Length: 393
Ligand code: ADP
Ligand code: MG
Image (cartoon, rainbow, N blue to C red; front, side):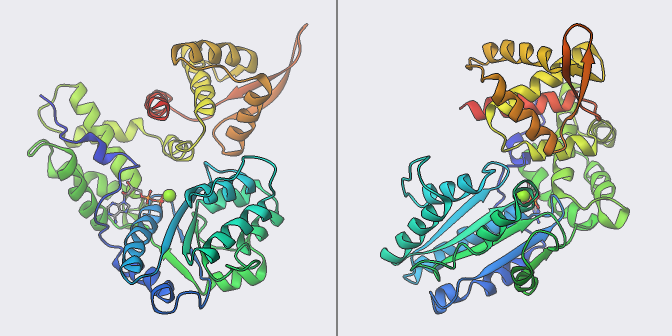
């Protein structure tokens, strides 16, 4: 007997068709972009959406932009919605390249500068009498890995060129204050055009959990108290983070545990087990690697597997590479080169997912030791494996 009816509807990428408790925020986004239907081309709007992890930033903006694009089209305004994820597109070039290809522009993957690509985007909009809302999701990550000039470039990329009033920007940042990465002028502008998402309270989380549990589980397959337990654990008024993704992942893992135990119903005890299994760090990491390239994930999985099998704190890069090659075999992938693997390790370290130290080893010179200073790793391994299969098709 299975408890789930639609397990997928608890996954982080699932887009629900309603977003309770965020009506006001949806309305303020609509008011910032009203000019696109009343007086298109009058201004190029820039808006900042901030809030902690799991407060619904990505879902809110997706929902708004998708709906608003339809409204605009009904009124005869050709509006495009571009969503760039900064965890996936990690350089200035890949951001603008991604944006161009979402507009259907074919730009070669080398030979052009970011400026030239932006100019192509702007003139495409101008020549075809189109407008765009371009979303830069998790922009804080981009800002933390690139130099100030790149942030400045993005913040002002709409300014030059013919179609300058056609490109509107939404920055999404998990940093609750803007201070830090924009230039002062942009910063004070965005300060007046900001939508702040507050962490969820227990009662809001309960509402969200009830709604998603109805979609995910068979009728009668869970105790209402199990949902209440999660909501109270996670609610900001009960000293939780107010993170809806945590709450939903906890429910998902609790459901898996209940199924594995062959239980007839998901109960509070399954939730307690799920909470003890999911550390905050593991949650944060699952979030950060969702958009990592396939081979970065394969490398991370090799590290996790080795650490678990050996039951040690850290493993050598050489061993990791061997494990990685075996893993590539299993998954039917061609292994990447050594230099590329080092680049992945550097990036995983920047994301705060692994730690590295350099050690002198007798007769062999210096070697890099990779460690993961949190855990348990079992859930991370499962998550990685599922993510890798998903990326492969
Ligand atoms: P963020 O981008 O702020 O980290 P997300 O938009 O990814 O957050 O939301 C995290 C998860 O929580 C998603 O699965 C989303 O569907 C869910 N979620 C967030 N807010 C709500 C809400 N108000 N109602 C229903 N589900 C929500
Ligand atoms: Mg997000």
